[in-house]
Image 1 (spheres, rainbow, N blue to C red):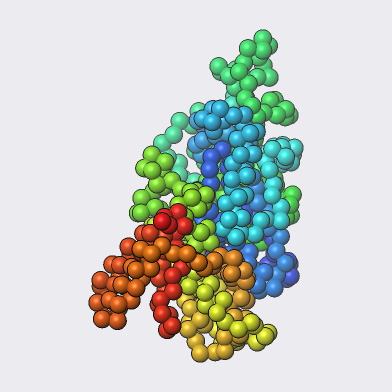
Image 2 (cartoon, helix red, strand yellow; image 1 turned 135 degrees about the vertical axis):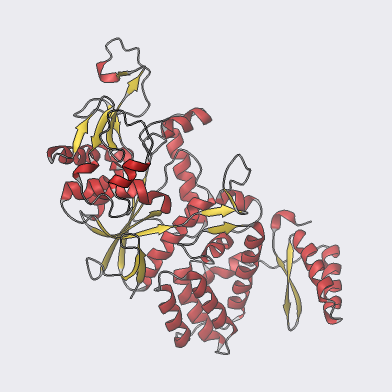
Length: 478
């Protein structure tokens, strides 16, 4: 049985689906106004592992994900510049072109990392009517009020507002310093924003002089656009039902976005929205926050351009628990690349499986992945299996079963491990020299030479039959 940390209770709980055989999962997807980077993609690999574990456990999973292609205001206080408009101006494209460009980039990153695509990919622009209808239900039930700039959710009318964030309203009111304007409470949030230009709403402008937003729609309240939070509630409940099993996202969504989702969803339906909330921690780069200004902003495509395999990045992600902050370094990525290639070589050297695996290790692996998705320990079990004395056919059977969860495409290991037919004379001599140093027990000098070989785009694996040269980094080969 899967045990998973539930942010709602702050405890690891036994997973009990609403339906004994079918599990419904909703994932907060990307806002497609900029590139999805390796921090974002770590979270989606984490979601993919969750889906794979559930399927490994025998459940049929329906996985829905939103694509936020509607322009929303940059800050959580419903103020600031529209994200889609900002991205469009930056690249000189329309908002629709921006949305398509970055949605494609996100999907490509998913595929490069071996992630399964969601069963349902839900675009916010294709569900405007559903969002309007949900706001109307909230309005009818008395949870909304109107200001000069939009329709807002009154959080004071939802007593359980703090159930996810664990931050009582009175504490937030005491500690937050913001200009409330016409908002009744600091935590109130926009459900629908009116389109404005020069202080006037478009529906009241008679001379047509207003500079219109590229994304706006007619509504019962006038021309405008939905608030950020309403789309996830409207689309998830339409796709998965008023109540469903699991909702995932980053830890940055706990206090505002997901808290607001729960409030509006449960206020509208009168039912519990989601049973299990699964949140993933952040990724830093060389112990710093990722930032374009710092020059440490990387996409999966950037990693590939530097000569690394995207599945090596996936392997690296698996080494840190999803609830722990991960520090990305290129040294760690290189080590992951080497480890992944070594695993592939082991699998390729074994006899074909005959249907009989290594039961002891399979039971241990099954127990580990179901213990709050402990993938770092699961990887250690993989290597224990590799090094064991069981028949290679049995080990291969078991490792390929493990890979249904790992997602490293080990069944097709051969296509990633193309041997080097022609190696430069310089590299060959360096490998020979390193072997001599090892035999003479000059291990430190041998390690230094191996590092130089790696910088040239190759690596050396020490086998009983002698050193084996493999591709390490194609971009640096001479």
